[in-house]
Amino acid sequence: MFSSFLLALTIAFPKPGQTLPPVERTYMSGSVPHGITNIVVQGKDVPVYWTGGWVTMVDLVEGTNVIEVVSVSTRTNYTIRVARRASGSSGAAAEPKKYAKLSYAKDEARKHPAGKKPADCVIVLDPGHGGANDCGAISPHGYHEKDANLSFARILRNVLVKRGYRVAMTRDDDTAIHRLERGRIACTNENAVAFISIHHNAPNYNRDPRGLRYMCVYAWNAIGKALAKPICDRMGAVLEGDIPNNGVLEANYAVTRNPEVPSCLLEIDFITTPEGEAAIWNTPRRFKIANAIADGIDDWLLAPYLKTKNML
Image 1 (spheres, rainbow, N blue to C red):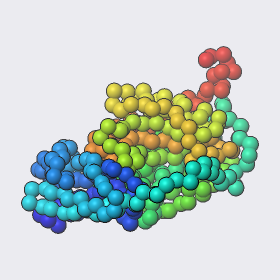
Image 2 (cartoon, one colour):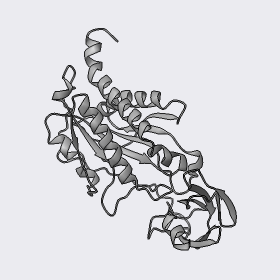
Image 3 (cartoon, one colour):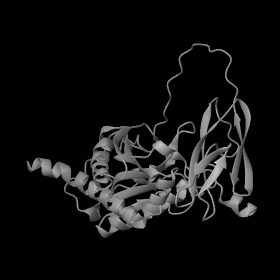
Image 4 (cartoon, rainbow, N blue to C red):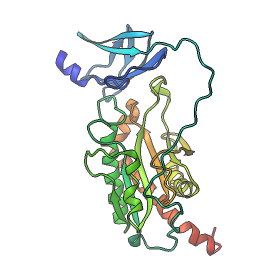
């Protein structure tokens, strides 16, 4: 019982070897064997979701924090270290972030593929994260975001191929790819018309994931936002009443700042909540979302053509 519980327990934050900055609270999530309906974390009862997943917030103090997790007769401890608070402040303004340009990308955007058939268009799918050192977020049962991203990207690829599109993947296995290299495949393929990065969300370590769950699409420049909007609209429509749609949000991520190929990043759900994790395991729901994304790409491909025909 003890060993099986330890194998089932997953702590989402902090990552191994990480020391949190000065914070008063952080969240922990994990899972328990079938049949257990609650656990005790730091002396407080924590309800368990039907999948066996749980999530809770814990109080922290500066220095070393030993968090006790108890399930029936099973007990384990998890250590979190919190950095010391800085003594005083210089008052100097933080320097603005410097973003590296995609050296392989042209500065001018490619012509919109209006009127092209899907067979003439390559859609590049980028399953986020990957490799031994970049698993992304972690679900209550220890499911890595990198695997959820790849699984969904394969579903989306199949949906797009059935519609006649050609699809390229930045990775089709557990390969590590530097964030600045992910867009290269789109820029070096003259038929690539769109780059879409697939992700599943997680909150910051000091936010409660129990009240944080939505879908959204990130884009940076005009060509990226033009692609993101119809995809986001279609996803929001099929997920209405399920999770909120936070719309198209602006973010200068390495995978969204491509000046040549329209690029966006999808956050499909929150993998950190038990409900979000269960949704990721729901195959019909994933196909529904994949078809919605494909509908959005269809809309984006047709939009300029329809405008010229005064049909919008």
